[in-house]
Length: 189
Length: 189
DNA sequence: GTCTAATATGTTAGTGACTAACATTATGGG
DNA sequence: CCCATAATGTTAGTCACTAACATATTAGAC
Image (cartoon, rainbow over all chains, first blue to last red; front, side, top):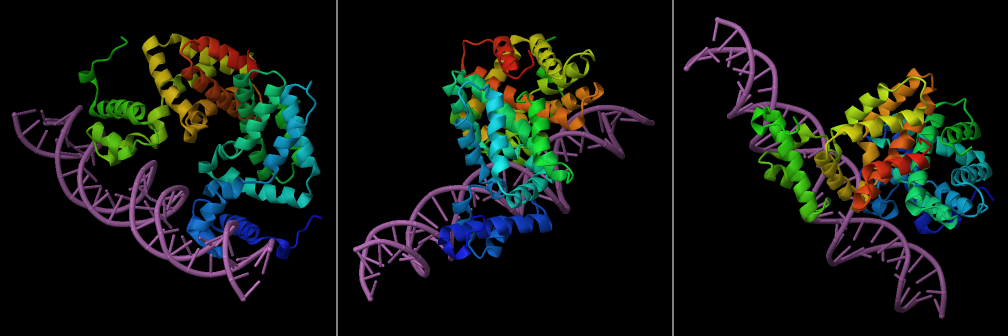
């Protein structure tokens, strides 16, 4: 089911969602830099301390998307013979191809904010540690040297971060197209 | 001449150097996180305010190396027919090949600190804006699409950051070797 | 040399993200 | 209904970084 009833969620999950929503609204209303963490907590009906118990940083409120672990999983499940960059590309395309358009819109809203704020350059990479680690693990499984695996994975995610921010800023580009183009540039096509 | 007399430098340059040296010493003595900006300023014989007039952030004290603009220059001077990734690789190799071994050691000291501290992941990329912009400009000159240019440049610098941090942590690897290996992975060989 | 304008620094007071320690309340299984 | 535990609140603090304004220092004109 796509829409989970809010009453079915635990208290933790409810405040979690309330915080995400409050943050997104305020970022869009007044900008990322002009929005304080205390302000976000207040709108979510919760204390500032609770905010930081749910999210390790203000950035995470914007970039802790649920797709990261899914991508990591998809990459790990890729066929062993596949080239590293292709494996990552495939995992990302597969994951983002399976989610509903509502979630894609939400992703776009968040990344559109990232694209506008200078202090958020590199933010996607900073908040994709799990994905990078999974990529490294997946390539290690294929016998790729650990250091080289991390170099490639980091480069890939950083490049994708730029591409996704660009995608979010231009309404007329579809996500698969933007993805294909970026992966082509990065050598994962 | 390689060693400029300290008496020949302007006051600004002298405090600049004093801050860099004090920061490096303290980071090595007590670790990056455990060293405060006030502490650095005190050892440099200067106020904390002055520190932030010379460097925009604590990170910059570690990563504002003088090679970045040189690399940017070298990349812009590359032959127009050269492929983007190769142009960057060539510019970096050329620049780092021309500097004295003392400066290389200093670079290694700084990157060794980066390699150890978790909060400095992605720090190289964050502090290489000038290089990234130069790469983008150089590729635009060659007719490469702006977005694709930025994707490639960002990926390259991020990957190199990982490679350099790794190099700094292992005494037995030479910088050219580490560079060649990384550029091979990143498609710039 | 002295005077002066620009340069470089100091002081103070503050903001905002983030943390630690401890008290308090809500929730869900028995 | 009771109780262990999960979830949140409160308070007080640290630290990177900034703004506004005062002060000192330097470098060149004379």
